[in-house]
Length: 104
Image (tube, rainbow, N blue to C red; front, top):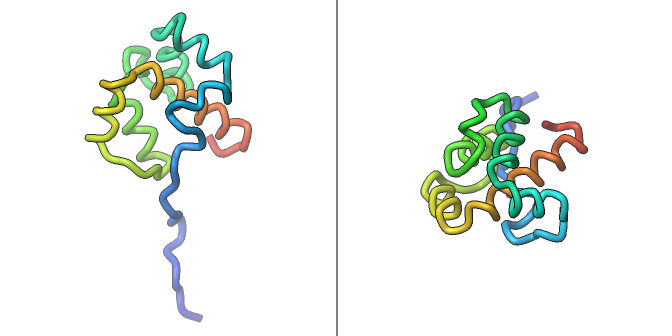
């Protein structure tokens, strides 16, 4: 029998929520708006990273790479620069959904 797929390979995906899907998780949205740094610390803790690394382009790029999510470092930088609260909330929502699905 011929092998047609490499073991462990999976197709690229997208984030499970959009950048502006605030109503999908109001608690995360309120946390991001009221205490942006706390949300970043929570993300860093979830990902076992330094608490100073939970915000912005670096953590987003690490997460995208780990879960094979479409995008680029340039896109991560631009989105993190234009609306840091939005992309941080999106990342936290995705982490929470993957935890619920048992794939985090």
